[in-house]
Length: 140
Image (tube, rainbow, N blue to C red):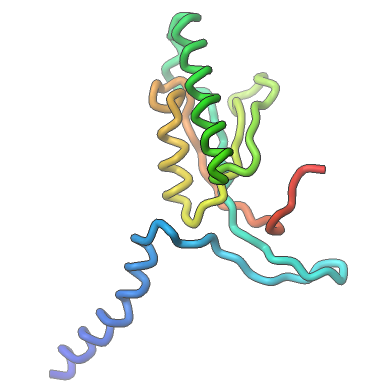
């Protein structure tokens, strides 16, 4: 009986956590921080590195079509507020570009990134990392 009560208690305590994971309206993690006398809210973002993928044998025409679809897809995510920063590198290394995703979980960031037409085609692959940054900060 004691074991049944413990299992029931554990199950009831776990339900809010499971519901939060399944909730698409979950908010990114934050905490308050003071730096140089200024209070700020730190937020967990996700930086997605777009790296050269294994399938780069498309014709020039196919590659240009994928590029247009890629830019439209990322532009749409930017307009929706899912991506806050986005852009290419100079193209000399393996990392072709990166995006900063403003979502609650690494799984959400990875899912959005993997739906990019360039990633689906294998021309790019993604590498996702959590990144803490002062909420609302940007490039100056």
